[in-house]
Amino acid sequence: MFQRILVANRGEIALRILRACREMGIETVAVFSEADRGAAYLELADETYCIGPPKPADSYLRIDRIISAAEIGNVQAIHPGYGFLAENAHFADVCRSCNIEFIGPTTESMQLLGDKNSARQIAKQVGVPVVPGSEGLVRNEAEAVRIAHQIGFPVLIKAAAGGGGRGMRLALNDLSLKSAFQQAQAEAEAAFGSGELYIEKYIEHPRHVEVQILGDNYGNVVHLWERDCTIQRRHQKLIEESPSPVLRPEVRQAICQAAVRLAKAAGYTNAGTVEFLVDKDQNFYFIEVNARIQVEHPVTEMVTGIDLIKAQIRIAAGEPLPFRQEDIPHRGVAIECRINAEDPKRNFRPSPGKIEQLIVPGGFGVRFDSHAHAGYTVPPHYDSMIGKLIVHQPTRQEAIACMRRALQELRIQGVTTTVPLYQEILAHPAFVSGQVDTTFVERTWPSE
Image 1 (spheres, rainbow, N blue to C red):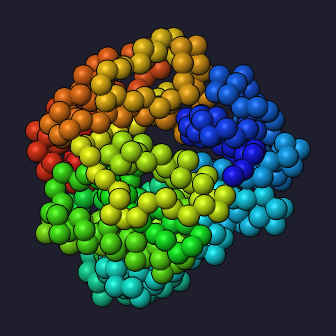
Image 2 (image 1 turned 90 degrees about the vertical axis):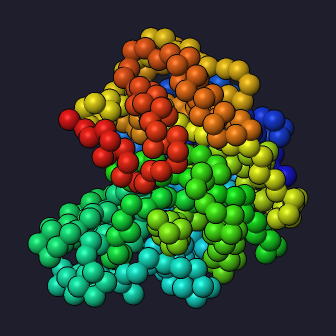
């Protein structure tokens, strides 16, 4: 087992990793930017190092500065969290070339699955359904139009690299396709350094369902059931739950087994998530793999009782999975709301500033993961998520009631948050009945 780990991230996920390491008896080194200097969560680390100015490109994305901190801190491994360098295969390669273990998948599997086009090819090889689309990368607008006519409008243009909705555009006809192609290419180039694109058939009114997987270094891969991430806005997830409220048992088994099949084919190790779209007839289609821990991992932890961060660390240290597929339970229902410092009434505009008051909800089955506190200043330089409110109850009806109560209890003053929107969503008949799709929020609460 590792004696010292560097946490190459910030905020909520950095705190989550620091806590897990402390419980495992592992010393930690935390890095921070000038914007995060003095943050309370840094006090949990054994050593801290400033790696640059607030701008991510000058701090959290600087591989050389993170490696320098790791060498000075004499660590054996680096946990990248999510975002920033978490899915950067080059960073993983640099870590290992410096004899520092990267707590994540191998460079090879990251490259295979990080590129959506090659991931689609692997999925096809092992019989995992994929959304109809281009067989490879689309070189220009003319080729995009030809492929769109073959598979039929509407279509989605998607960046081959990256995720989070960036480099993704919907096209309804030839004219909008040409414009969308240019926009997606420019956005993908700016966000990921690669303007490579491919095209998929747009599945109308789908659900977004993802499967959590874990793989060790000995060929063992298991799934930890699914999470339903259908409540989102512009491909950004807002609310996640497990299990999916609509999947039939046979579909649940099939989608989870498909995720394991794909992971094994790619030689995947550590934690990852295989994402699918599910249509109204419960046909499912593979869309991408997130080769890292995800924001919504607590949902899975609550229903399985498995600490995913500790599992990541143990796998990276060379330990085999301590459980078989049949040993992994699924108890009750968990729901997570991402608490963002944003104004839903003003097109989700970020709301940085000082949190004057923060009252955290409690009670049976309530968990609040956050690095924020009263007096904390939400910086304008990073993602606007300031916390995650998670509930776990025996039934979905009880989980919804618990989340509504917890949202009422949660008090955040000084910045505008998404809490009022979640209160409306949780009370909406369509959500309560599970009859929603990925465009539900945009249709029901259009931004001004």
